[in-house]
Image 1 (cartoon, rainbow, N blue to C red):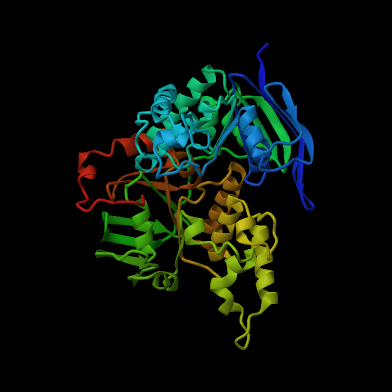
Image 2 (cartoon, rainbow, N blue to C red; image 1 turned 135 degrees about the vertical axis):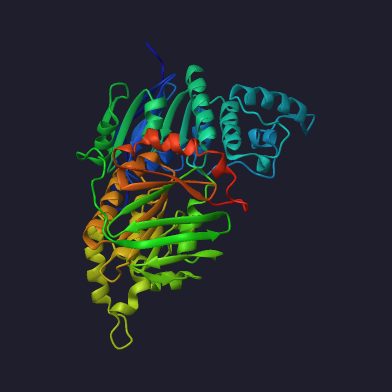
Length: 511
């Protein structure tokens, strides 16, 4: 019988009157990858914090290597053999790889740190996780994938038997994600019990042996991954049946957005149209210019040449206010830094740009604002629908609904809605809700939707047409039955040498 490295029984945790965990059971044997899935706010983070000693559960036990614990401190968790690699890495950029691995557990000899011995051990640990960096390199000089491997090497230096990976590929490139997947498979063979938290079902299918789904703090699904379809997993997370995406048969209306030979830093010339009620995707690799195109249309970047028309009217946005005045709105990819006001309540986040629309004799009409917010919260399935709750207290998916709601409430009717990575960092259930909101907006209001995405599954689910972007140019178009994940990936990886040399001013930083 395979030894069990981690067994959680009846774990419960409440915050005030809100039950974050409600009798959760989870068992992870040695050498197993166990996927932990669920909505943002389902209880995954609370479970991890209890396991890591950051929170004390109200009830239940955490058994690690056969030893039960009713409460853990961070130090006790580490000593018991638990290592948690959070999405925000804890490495110190100014220290070397070796110094990071041994931080807080330095080896000394005659009162001095034994750097040579530490470097020898660090080299062995790096080899164990197939890292290519040197023990003497500073971590700040390493790419994100190598930094993550340093974190894992640090965990192995403490003889971890349970490894928790929290959204490990969120900030990684495709190549780095593939390399990490190989390391996870290696660590499984080395006998670790791995809890893998992700929103990406492709990773679950590739890596996980078993899957547990949390919803509202309870385990609502547990099964082996083998034999489960992606649709079944989505339905387990969402808690309701889902419809398979089908090829769009929508006939777009007259052009709502027309872009002709638009050029800007890192892209161009770009020409495209989006019809009334049409949803068009920009799909490309990192650095392709997707984000720059959207930001130029919104006035965050200055266009060098070209024309833009909204409903036949020429517009030349040099700042966001110009774009908004012309009927163009943008939901940026980085909602926390570029869109949300974290300390303000949900209602203010949604309606601050529109308060003048409700004002009477120069004073805000709070009653009117509340009515609009209540209607919006119901339309986008905002959870919880609490107008005064600070935006920072909402899950990622609900934060995205707040930002999206800013432009689709009863006081705002943009002609063109630009979305940059519309469901980045959003769980599967909230993702489906956002797709429904965007699709309804296009169908019922005739809004032209232009969105940039690096997720082929998202493009297939949401787009009527897809424009392939490479080196700042539109190089291909897919639609109808030709719009599949396989076709998208093939098109973006075979854009051709012309596209690769089309832009003389390379895109940097943003996609």
